[in-house]
Image 1 (cartoon, rainbow, N blue to C red):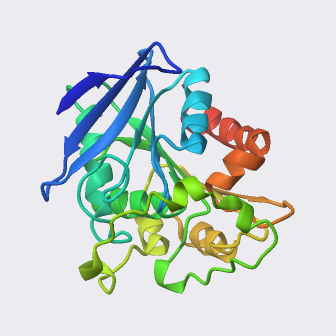
Image 2 (image 1 turned 90 degrees about the horizontal axis):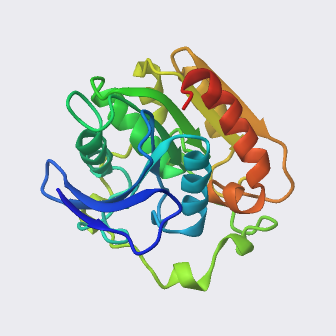
Length: 262
């Protein structure tokens, strides 16, 4: 593990670190620390980095609510090594970061996880495979139940405004060999996760149809809650943070205050 101070921070202390995965990939993550007893780990979606403004907005929000916050770059993204395989090995990235900061003898005894889009599905798969990870709550925002059944609809209203040239120029590194390998089936994973779960969907989501959330909620072991946001347009995952933050934050705060308070 390496640690270096950040040049600026929305918190009392911000540390940029790396964690090594079981298959030898260095995963970059940032820890915003008060310190607090409770930690939230943010898992971004595909083509998203921990320093994107939406993830920084989430980190700021949770920090102000009293949590410490860690956010990672999955392999192939940002400052992390490796190449992205759409869930084939990315669970190891999440586990490396979680084990670096949480557990017996670590900075935090436990954590809550918030995953956006593919990030939520990856975290669910890893938590199901590694039940000893000390996760006390899981939030999945616009996460696919089964990656292979995704049917994007980029022609839907407002889909185009969810892209940016800045992001388009930061193309993730893709592991071509993994394109045809088994992908996460969060619909199976959530049935094996005993921690409380929140599934968030939005009407008109251009990438992950709300039917995925219905499948996740139906398959999940209790306790589970499904909140569907009736919104105009076609907002997906971090676009909810960008365009309707107060609506989303109210949902997250209400649920976390019950199942994983700061």
